[in-house]
Amino acid sequence: MKTHEFTIVASGLDPEADGYEDRFFEAGCDDATLSFQKGVIIAEFARQAVSFSKAVTTAYKDILKTGAKIERVEPDYLVNLSDIAERSGLTRQAISLYTKAERGSGFPNPVARVTSNSPLWDWLEVTEWLHAQAKIDREAVVEARIVKEANRFLELHDEQSDNFTRRLELLEDAGP
Image 1 (cartoon, helix red, strand yellow):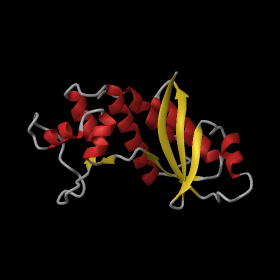
Image 2: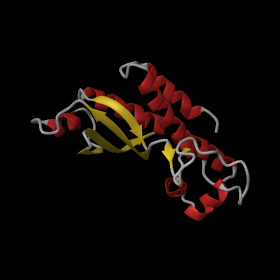
Image 3: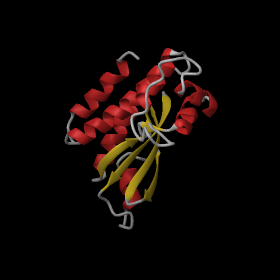
Image 4: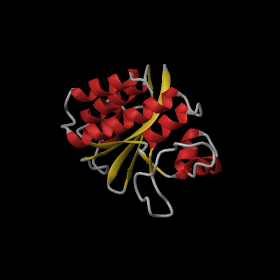
């Protein structure tokens, strides 16, 4: 089994309440570091599982057992140049050259803040392009796809649905 790192952002519980942290521990979140920032619960997981989708879905179910409402899964899919460099293990300069088509062509276009000095890219699109260039492995693409789909699902559906688990597990086997 591998250790998978990700964050679940949740709400609906009072961090000052008696037994707040115990509630998470008893629900199976003993592999998460909890914090409360900007009005939301941050559960940073280092979860051992056979796959990234299993790690996310089991953490998802464990968080629901606490009575919290899941807001989203992170890392966020919107990334700037520095985020891309950090996540990919490449230099910021190399990423900058890719975005300007000075080191290959076809790098994805920004999807937000396009006219600003700090545009944002879709991490899934970036991972797919980097994988096609043999700069990152397939696992990074799969993880980006799972996080993006998990958040899309949370926006569109009732978080209690069993479809959440099935959708994420199907993505694990999808090609890059």
